[in-house]
Length: 521
Image 1 (cartoon, rainbow, N blue to C red):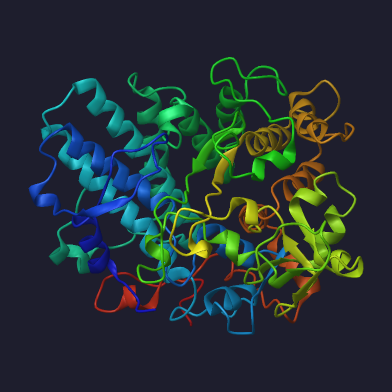
Image 2 (cartoon, rainbow, N blue to C red; image 1 turned 180 degrees about the horizontal axis):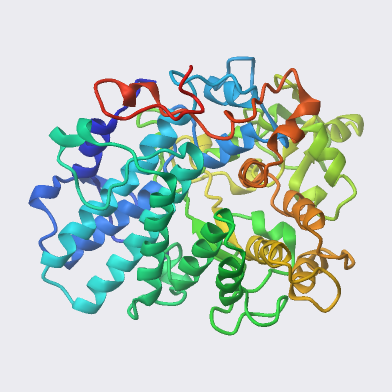
């Protein structure tokens, strides 16, 4: 892959893809050309197109298959990269083994994605005041854009720590003069963007799922702000934001937002329209099979979810009529033996882990082992014939399964953690206890005390494969101890591998400096 720098990102931001008017969901859209922002934003429709262009970055997938979920799974102790050999999707392989360098790894695409979203957001926020359109609608667009900018910056500050802070468009000829700010300043801006959005009366609490599925509202802003506070160890503030989202009685629909845990855990991973934007979904990334993506256009332009083909077993074939209907995939993001041991007797096992070795022993299927094969695959995302695209294009590029950025079980567990850390107690009768055990009761598990260790384990089992585990290990200081028993295959270095290096190309002829954790590389 040719590496891209800030100047390239500015070109993307000022030559954004136009999106068509949406179908039954806000982000079920197809590319329709490009525009120059200097000639655009003349009316409400063009402002709307600009807003969709900001949303579009949330689900970006790079041509080298880098996605945030894929990268964070590859980095965690719950997964191995897998694939065909030791260099297959090598940006993930080096992340699994923590042999990333500033010149090579997934950081180029993750950096580009985050700042592309920020530059698009800044462009729209700068243009909106001059667009002749309904003022209330304009305020809603601005609030949505600030939530998305906060989302992009939250990902970037967790991944890279030392960032430049942009809140307005920067001319391309000034990009090489930008400098970084302290992470605390980035967090302060994230907080402010989310507070601004929450204060905007024209922003819906939860946009209608039919017709506006995928759009953000105040529920997303509160949930994201709570998560930001959690990372900043502002326990009381985090708990308050999460309670706003979770409602007064965990396990029951929240009165204001109507969020509720779905009854069937396995249904969360279905890709049919009825399962998307369900009651548990707070912030969801939309994918579809209608774009007809093909290899000529590449991964980056498809609207399908590339994780579905990545996670399927290699050379999968049925040898019995009652074998599962998986599509032969590429064998990535293998479930580790450590995660298998932790979740094997949990009710969420079957929905989470595809146990290929058991299916082979039962003479139902055959497959080709992946590199670093464990025999276990990520069932949440493994593609199936029943959800493969039939609308044209390459099947492997057009799976329609959505991803959850934030779902209710996640916010229940984060609120429980915040309350325990704030010293509110963990026993029966405490809110932390009720929150934790609402998540467990959904899958038929009995109540346990809401200790930090119990909550942390519950997060691992509930959210396995969804891209949270590595971030959880880092923010709680558990990463080094967790990876130590897996050495030497995992070369995690404490005080370094908690973040990614700033891409080497970004440092050439600019005022940006490598983070101190990576400065000697």
